Length: 173
Image (cartoon, rainbow, N blue to C red; front, side):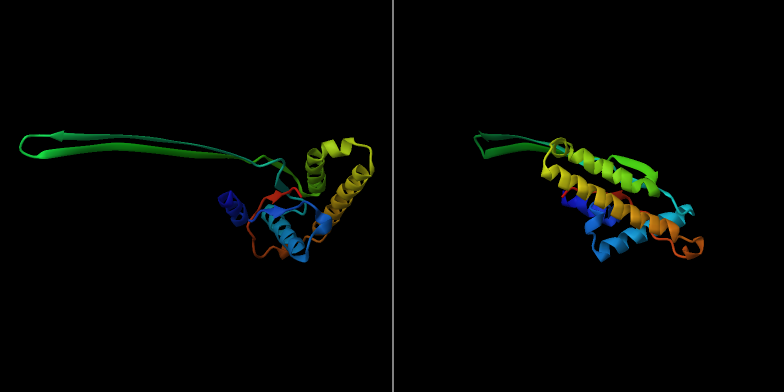
């Protein structure tokens, strides 16, 4: 698990969930990643990749051990024979569902992913549902405002240095 988290961090994955609660550092990281995608694709509304569903990890492994021990005697000298074998196999598989959409659609993609997680709660008719629905809409609007500002202020002349292109990902809270 730590290896996967480390790999995602090294790839520069940028979180887009809960945009209404972002810190200044998160906003800066998001803006940097968007600018890099805009510069690489030379357009204000580039197509970006986002992790669209749960990341799943399957681990498998087996360990087999066998051995043999023999003691024998010859009239002139005792002999001992030892034999053994061991085998170990491990494997892992990660499933990372990625969706590609224009940057301007990113708020809708992220809200759709969040609604998918919270389907059961949103099916209830109580104050918690209304509060959570209002939070989802507020987060979508916050992300939409940030994305629109980055689209509106993009200029090709600002693309002197190219930043690495990174995937966007939502997360559960």
